Image (tube, rainbow, N blue to C red; front, side):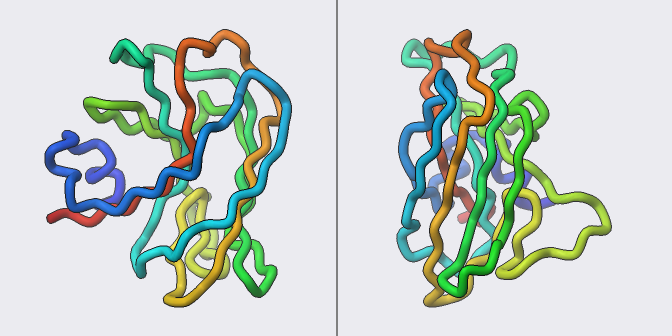
Length: 156
């Protein structure tokens, strides 16, 4: 899949890629927050979590925290609603961080606006909000910064 290849490409090859940083996620405590998304491009976007260490250390094991991500559009349609342990997410490495996202279930039709796993294909002019919830915390990951992100797979 082109998106998975782009996510795994070196940072230099990713310069033309759309990225939206939706802020920090606290996986050390059970909690919930909602984010209004900025206008999004007409592209396939994978939403997920960027894990990085301040000292540039690589992530060797994935957190056991369980999270739920829900994307809703302005029509109150559920674009996607997934929950799983972060260690079960698909892992894409770059020189800066590890990106974790979920693919959809094989043979499952995409939801509204292309929702499949943590992927979506936003409509032009669509408005979206996302909720992220830590259902089961993991305090062993305190040295890593976890950010909620959206990235597309375009190459330039």
